[in-house]
Length: 616
Image 1 (tube, rainbow, N blue to C red):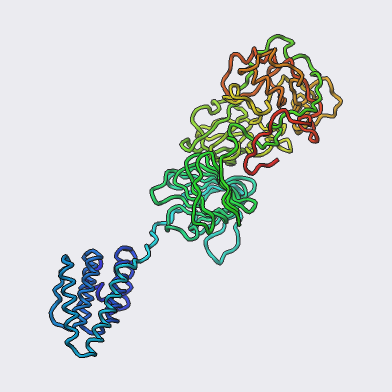
Image 2: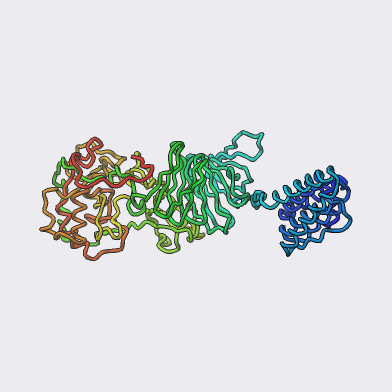
């Protein structure tokens, strides 16, 4: 605790160097006291420059002590004016100016002024100069307020960074420009200034003490250092150099919002879920929940981006923002994806080259569940293991996970992440994590297909594509559907690997087998069929029939029944009766090729609204 005489000696510059250093260290830990002492030292300098006599010393000390005692700034300013008047007159008694009576202050000043005329001219000139200087000091103290200091707070470092193999790590040491490459996956606690570039083959996770989690996409580069020109020091701050991240941000304390700087903008987050990317010379923000503020580099006005909205900041252009065209969790994939492409006017239809789907009687248990698991920020964070390595992590609810002993293909989603995780043969481990035979990351703004056959998506067709989703039977189905048929109706000499046709990949058909179907075949109700005569002109059955006529149904694999439609909703008892009427009407679209997708010609429906950063 600093004592009064120590501060006075410090301001008078009479302390030994060691003691002066100690006082400065104490002031460094007390920002309020430091600002007061700096302020008082300025007053000290002004008084000494004006008065130039030893009599000023005691008055300066009294003013310093007033600062220490915590007297109001206004009272100290009044005392400075009184001290100036007293010393400029050179008198031995104090000026009797009441701080509470403006009348007495005015009359006292007038009396002092009259007294000056009785003195020699040089005294009058000197007193006048002192009065003007004193008035200038008072006005400066009265009207020129010091610039508010930026609050100094502790810079918050993540408690854990989990990274995949091949991640690049840049240490804080400014002389070490070599990026260390991690051969194996692992985790670390970074230091302020450290940089990280996630490998192209996996995603990373940044976790803070309050539960805030940032998910780094493959190839993303971040640096844990304060943003440029901050409104404050400390708290959660980092720089997104390139790539993409999604965030689940816990509610932040008032005045301590998470700050993320990109090459084009500064993002301020109080508590929300969002997706932030630096691609193609611009910064793109999509908000899932809450509110995020974005301000361009060099701009003064920020843009507030709410849930369901986006904003794009680019050099030499105003921020572009608005509503997202559609919810990618309910209506995924690009507007040109096979799943969103309506059939065209040049469709060529061929009868099914197989036994009728209802040859053995009405269809039963037609809707088969493929419900994606959608996690929220409040759900526990689970790791996903593949062959002994952590390949991803995601927040998932306790319910609807694969049952113990069950292995199934599932889709995992999470708000704030613009991709789906598709798992092959997934199961729950004893520790609550998931283990799978394979995993694939499928962008929700991408094509919904893969160019090659891979274990998690053996035919290149996303299992998230074509699902009949909740609410679509009432509001309309704006996409193609996905179905499976029994193995006996699929072409291919190898029972485990049926033949495929575009857009499916893998065991491509040669065209020799015309008596069976191939995976990837597009089935549709021919355009000339009058649906109203079969299922009426409205209602759920009509919406289902209309989708089968306007978009069609893709065969995505084999199952245990003649025909199974994949859905993410619970069983609908009436669906068996509807589909028993509609499925026999399906025919093969014979000219569904890359050159003429969906048959070509004029589309039967409008194209799906594009999503940000679509990939064809």
